[in-house]
Length: 168
Image 1 (cartoon, rainbow, N blue to C red):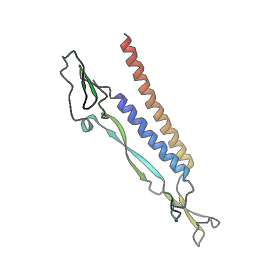
Image 2 (cartoon, rainbow, N blue to C red):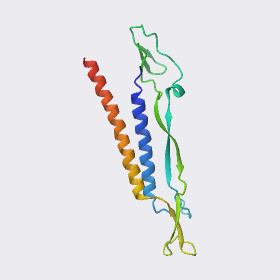
Image 3 (cartoon, one colour):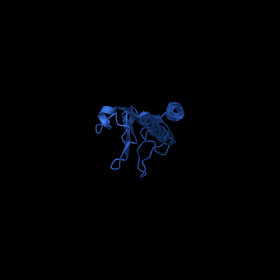
Image 4 (spheres, helix red, strand yellow):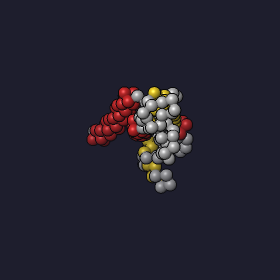
């Protein structure tokens, strides 16, 4: 048994924070028609994709000392605390969870609208704007926020269960 539930919850919290940052960037640039250097160029909506982390692809390495050993062992090179019964604490490697695979520009990230009064409109009065729906972005923000909270609750509940088990 290993305590990788903290890896899973922590990686989920990190991934959802990145998603919230991406949504915030989309909302902040909802009407951006210029690049940071001031040249013409529309902001393109960004989306986030996640990838699952599996223990067998990430954590290939040491195995704990024999399960019949009554002692714990500290490895100063890695900072790992190895305890009998195959429990590894603080191994510094995420053994399960999720990670951000890619932040990519969304398909159909630009829309063209007729607004001859816009300073970046072309000679026919059309201007390219980011194809960002405030409602969709807010739904994404709420979803990511709730997923973040759920992962935080999981970590807190596991901590409480471990403390309760130690008091038995």
